[in-house]
Amino acid sequence: MSDVPEMEIDAVTDAAPAPTAAMLAIGDEILSGRTKDRNIGHLAGLLTLSGIDLKEVRIVADDTDSIVGALNALRGAYDFVFTSGGIGPTHDDITADAIGAAFGIPVTAHPEATERLVAYYRSRDLPYTEARQRMARTPKGASLIDNPVSVAPGFRVENVFVMAGVPSIFGAMLDNVLPTLPSGAVMKSVAVVCPFGEGDIGGPLGEIQKRHPGTAIGSYPKFDGSRYSTELVIRSRDEAAIEAARVEITAMIDGLGPRA
Image (cartoon, rainbow, N blue to C red; front, top):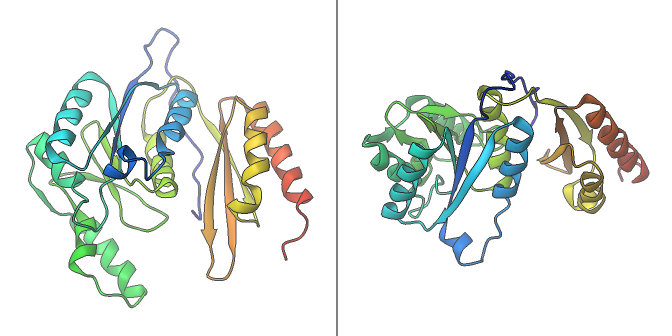
């Protein structure tokens, strides 16, 4: 991510009930154990800090009937539903079609998504193949969710937010979604640029997070073609908590010394 927006979320009164949410994680690889899901915990932490109550999580296979059944149950029971997985370019990426089936809406190539993808692959001198074209398909009338990591967007239909399963992309899309939702309190964020890759900072950053449970610290890897770096985003409703975490993160980065 190059630009991480400040979280600007309207506060609700103490008397107002907190919005509710559910998550639908999609993928055979999760159920088989091949992939260890990281998106559930990430979403849960950010929703908690946003004053949105995550009430239910379901994991389903890459099966249209399973996705449709679960989605229809969740979207009627909660204010928001967040899905992850199944919107890539391969044959088993069937989430867009399943979402369309759940809502009874035809799935077509989204004009703006197509435009973004065509420009992206043209800039890299890569063909816009039939497989890549699949990533522009959404239920008709869907609005797009920006993807600052790899361009291919997610999308929203009514109260359902459909996002990628790759954790870094899921997190980046979620950063674009959360500021648009009502919540129980104002969320603030601060970005810290780190010249080291996630492999260098993962351990100490995890310890810092444990010492600052009132914050959510997001890690977003970047690659400029020759070296890795990381953008760290600290979120909390408490400015003092953000500053305390920021001080520790800055000290951690300084302690690693100059980048070789």
